[in-house]
Image (cartoon, rainbow, N blue to C red; front, side, top):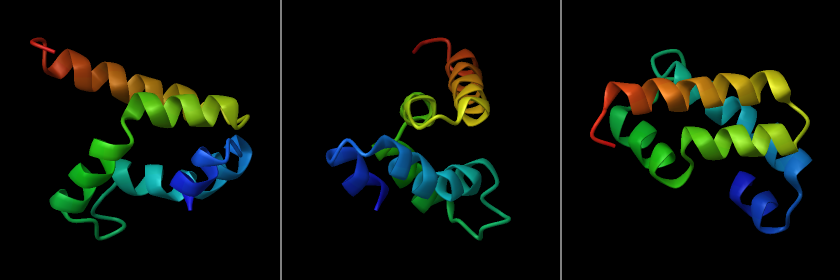
Length: 80
């Protein structure tokens, strides 16, 4: 649904439905998310993209959290 709302530029709806997806990516054990599924989600929606969506969807706290995770990931892999 999140991808559909993004395609329609309905960013408030996209941020609403992607909020639990973001929570699952952050805490995969809690949501019984396998590493493969987590990686697949992040291949399609980077932490930066989550941040952009949350920012545009009027969820600044989640946007900050997503952008912080993006920075942490980037710093963990300096070659990127």
